[in-house]
Length: 477
Image (cartoon, rainbow, N blue to C red; front, side, top):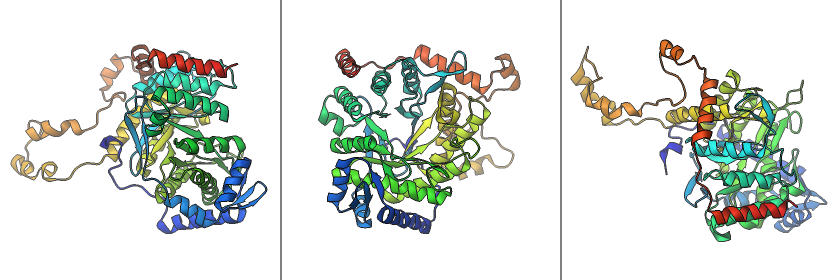
């Protein structure tokens, strides 16, 4: 395993052991006493057969069923790249970053103005992600406005898988569309067994807050459990809107929603690859908008990461995202705060890199700058070695007072361990001025344009590409 992805310093926790237990026990109480509404009849029957208390759509889950499911948690969720090579081991202190999903708008690289996303944008973002070394997976950074909206998700998957070899976390509008996307993934992987043994895809789907498993999302969760393919099952809860206004109350409700889905998935296939997560965001009472990068959002996500670690489930976290309407200093600051905190927490599958405008717009500049920030953060979380060589006591004694270290072999051996920027500026003022006084946004914009001009992702084999296009065509009728 590449140490680049590991948190090698003590993990930041925001919950004490007693608080972890209290949130867990409170969650069990909600599931037992209040229960969840399950809108899919087949799921209700599965819950009933598993031993839950069922009254119409209301399902109350006994604590022992939750505990039994958690005891069966696999030690890791593994994902491969498009070619079947190991790419991500979602476990313990491994941290991987990727984009966000399904923004209706994109910040145009040429005009720098927000506009509706088209399918070409999804292809272009995939190219940029394929190039950026610190991004490990791709989500669909837009909703294409120029294709049939009923099957745009299928077009999205085709655009992504054709323009990157990296793992893909995708969304699906319906069960039929999900089945089509999985058929496409099976074609790329080489078959049903090949995709199951080396999955390069994971479905992202959500319960509906408060405490509801909607029919379509539940059907999709059940299908992926039957297929034994990875699922990210995570609520988007607005504290004070669709959940309690307090962070603690929001955590309990979100945890109940996730664990309700986990019990269902476990009842279908024990030990299925299930990825935990949750957005617990405060609602702005003046505007009704979620506050993506509020301190409370970061704090709640950190707490959920603690819960995920307690359950030995991979954590779906956030980074590189901002409430700012454009790429500016606010976007850079909020994106960096998310990135640092998610890394220190040890979130595993960390998404939303490139989000601005409360998650409604994808920004190339935010993507490119976040790649640089992730590189810097990984240098911090990678720690440093303390041993005889690095303590350098003999060298300190040899150089002594008033000496210099610049010409020593020790310096030559180790100076490259220090982090060097690829995008950030460390030049003198005079050189910076001579080069055009470009700020960070301008440099990021130029870098994104350069990537799109020069980077050519490895194409799919022609036969596979044709098969994908045929599946898309068959669904768009």
